[in-house]
Length: 174
Ligand SMILES: CC(C)(COP(=O)(O)OP(=O)(O)OC[C@H]1O[C@@H](n2cnc3c(N)ncnc32)[C@H](O)[C@@H]1OP(=O)(O)O)[C@@H](O)C(=O)NCCC(=O)NCCS
Image (cartoon, rainbow, N blue to C red; front, side):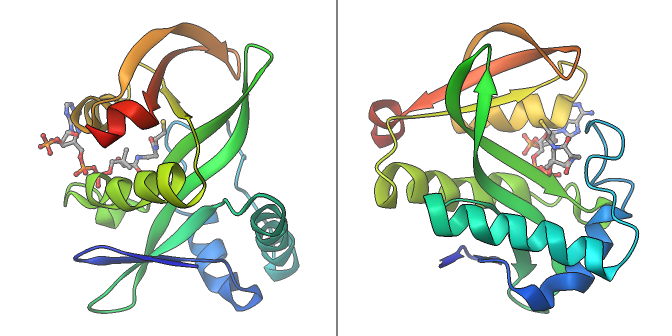
């Protein structure tokens, strides 16, 4: 599976992506606004386990938070994609995005979103995709607003109030 935009390539995880996983696990920007230690691995074997988990999810559901690379240089810059998530006991599909700090502020997150949403609503035929963020994460709120996600309500996630947003296939198609 490969998704391409003007500047970016998103593709399936491979077992050989250990260095990418180690980079994200130790990047301060990537780990902002995540539950502490959520992506932490201590060695290559730990990274390989996380990659295999992501590969298995793709096998089962054709979705993942995919690794993103710059087309020009091949640099790994972060992850973007779709994963199942539970919101107040309800099964949803979540849009999730995280970039390593060096790559913030260049419009990459907004650019990748279009390809991922097209994949979700088109190839996967999803009816609805949700996203959530703490209000203090101004960049994340801005991205969801720019993409046309609708604010639904506040809910508790990982013990913190989060803003829940959703996009429907019908709205995305407009
Ligand atoms: C959220 C994140 C993916 C944004 O990536 P990015 O490529 O820098 O985002 P973009 O450049 O596409 O868009 C960000 C928008 O937010 C705006 N923005 C950034 N910081 C802001 C701030 N502190 N206050 C208000 N707006 C802000 C930018 O100006 C831009 O809007 P614009 O295009 O209208 O100028 C990145 O900051 C990140 O990885 N953060 C850590 C992980 C994370 O928080 N993920 C989301 C969890 S819900």
